[in-house]
Amino acid sequence: MTKYSVQATTSSPYINFDPDSKSFEIKGESYPENCWAFYSPMFDWLKSYFSSINGSPVEIDMEIVYFNSSSSKTFMDFFEMLDDQAELGKNIVVNWRYHEENESAMECGEEFMEDVERIKFNLVEFTD
Amino acid sequence: MSLFKYYDEMQREGVILYFNGPVSQPVVESIAELMRTKMRAEEAKMGSVQRVFAVLVEQMQNIVRYSSERHMDSPKFQGEMAHGQVVVGREEDGRFFVACGNRILAEDSGGLAEQIDLLQSMNRDELKAYYKERRKAPDCATHKGAGLGFVEMARKAAQPLAYDIVPMGGGTSFFSMKVVTQ
Image (cartoon, rainbow over all chains, first blue to last red; front, side, top):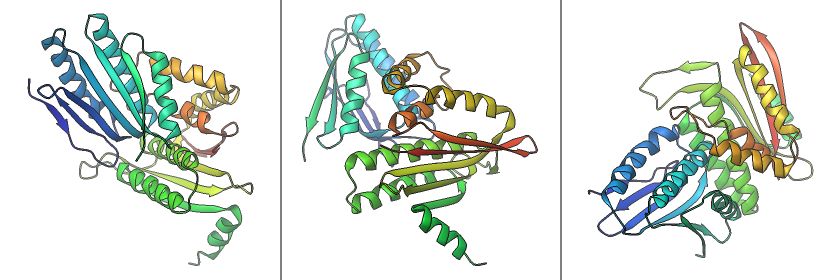
């Protein structure tokens, strides 16, 4: 399957899902004008990707500096989709990465972690 | 036209930024980034910078979505352009505040007031539980906002959200809200 890649803008993150190198990354800020319009192609891509793989693990790195309330809803939908895939037997890991000084990103990660059920959700702190 | 009376009043009110005009997504991005850069330069704590940034984005995106006063709606402009006001300043005790104002449809004012009154009655834990419940609720996929913005702001506020709705005639009302951040 061809990879899914989007360049970052001021208000939307860099997304790079590359099945060949097994690299799945979402990085940056997320407060686009229309969250649904921005993320729906990513959801579509993931749906077909998940239907094409069997047991191979998927590890997703998310490093979001800031996200607005609409993105928060979208990320919850995203984690629920991953939860559903995990229920179907997929091995899914999300690494929620945040800078040590970004307390708000850490708290948001904790709250997502409380709400996911089947995927492995890691909080990963990093320094400069 | 002398702007002195505005300048003088802003000084007294502790205003750092005052914006009145058309708001579009690029304006949201520029003003929010500008405030972030300025606050960082003044070495405000990272937490305060994040909270002011977050409240500013929610308020300005609400103007873009809900202001009934629209300047233009042309594909030439990225998204919609709506008229509104945004103010960022400091209280006497040093806490930051972010306020916004825009015209809304009078018929929407009841629902809006009800929503904010509900949030005003909640404590921190209730707000968190309500936020998570709303975030998990199935939502119309094409809806531009998730209705979470006010809950988000209430959670970042140091005190209950303050708001005011003034009927303006012509089927519209003026909505304003002030959030004092933690």
